Image (cartoon, rainbow over all chains, first blue to last red; front, side, top):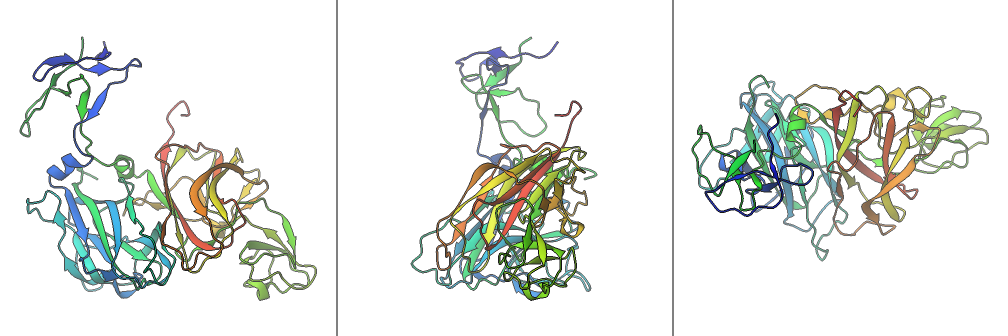
Length: 218
Length: 272
C-alpha cells in the first residue's frame, strides 16, 4: 500500500504531529525552509573567490603570463568545484570593445610542476562564506597573474559586452550570472573568467562557488 | 496510513533520526541541497555548445539558394557551387574550388560564378536516432568589436521533423562543432549534431519566439555595456528529429559569439 498524505488546508501548532499535506492532485505541498544555498553554506562548502577591490586589468588567457581570474581544482582536492554566481564590477572607465567569457584548462594537474600546464600563478585566498568559520579552500585561486602553457581553452561567452572605449558618463550596468550548477569542474581542471580581447578597464571579478565532496567512484 | 510530520523547528545533531518537518499549515518544509542543474551535470548530461571566440557574423537562418556572382552579401557565408569566370579568392575564398566555403568580402566579379547561400546561425540538430531529449538551459551572446547591426530582436527558430537522411539539413563535416561536456574533465560525448555557424537547409526554419535581445541602433559603438542572457529553465524540450536555431530576425551582419548550454536527457521507455 502506498504511503498517503492528507489533502487540504490544515493549521497546526508547533510540536504537534500532523499528517503531511497534499494538494488536490496528490502532490506533496512543500515550503522552503531556508535560503537557496543555506544548508551547503552552513556545512562549510561555500566560498567566495574575488579579485581585490583595487581591481585588475583583464587580459585574454593566452599562452604565457596573463592577468585574469582563475580557480584551479587540483587533482588531489577530492572536491567538485561548482561555480555559481559570477559578478563583474568596473573600477576604471577606459575600456576596449569586447565581451567576457569562460575558459578552462582540462589538464591542469595538481600543482606547479616542470612541464605542467600551469607554470605559475599569484595565489590569493578564497573566503569561506560561513563567515567566521575560518574553513580553508582546497582550490588554487589566482586573482591576478597566471602563466598557462598553451593558454586556456575557450568555453562560452557570459554575454557581458563592453561597447565603448570610454565608459564614463554611460549608464550603470549589471554584470551578473548564476550558473545554477550547469558547470562542474572535476579535480585536475581550471576555471577562468576572461575577455575575448584585452579589456584595458580595471575590473573586479567575484565568484561564489561550492567545493563539494565527490561521491565514491565519481 | 497517513504520513505524518512534526510541526515546528527542530535542532538535531548529525546521525540522529528525525521526523519530517512541517510548517504551521502542514506543508513539508524542504531545504535545497544543491543548485538546479548539478545532478544532471554531475551525471554528464549537460553540455556547452558555443560559437568560436573569434565570433561569427550573425544572419537570420535561411534556406539555401544559389546566388550568382555580383550578388554576394558581405559578411554572409557561401559554398562555391560553380567557379565559372569568377575569382572567389578575391572575395574571401581560400581557393577557387567547388565546395569551398567563404565569408564574402564583396559582391564578386565575373559573370558566371555561383555559390550556395549557407545558413550561418548556431544550430542544434537532435537527430531521430539520438536517444535523448535536448533541453536548452541558457543562451548568451557576446558582441565583438564595433558592431553595426540591423534593428530587430533575436529569435528562436526550428525545423520540425527534418529527418536524418532526407537532406533537409546538411552540415558539411568541417562545420560540425564539438560540444564540451559541462562536467569539465569528463569525456562523455554529445548525442546531438551541433553546427556553430554553417548549414545547408532545403527549407527555411520556422520562427518560434523572440528572445529579449533587442538591437535598437545601427551603430552600437560607443553605446553602453550590455548583458545578453536568456534562461530557458526547462520551458522547451527538443525531441529527436528536430533542429533548432538561434539568430536575428533581420539580416544582420555583425560579429558576436552565441553560446548555448543545455541538457541531453536519455529518453525513457515509452519515448518520453
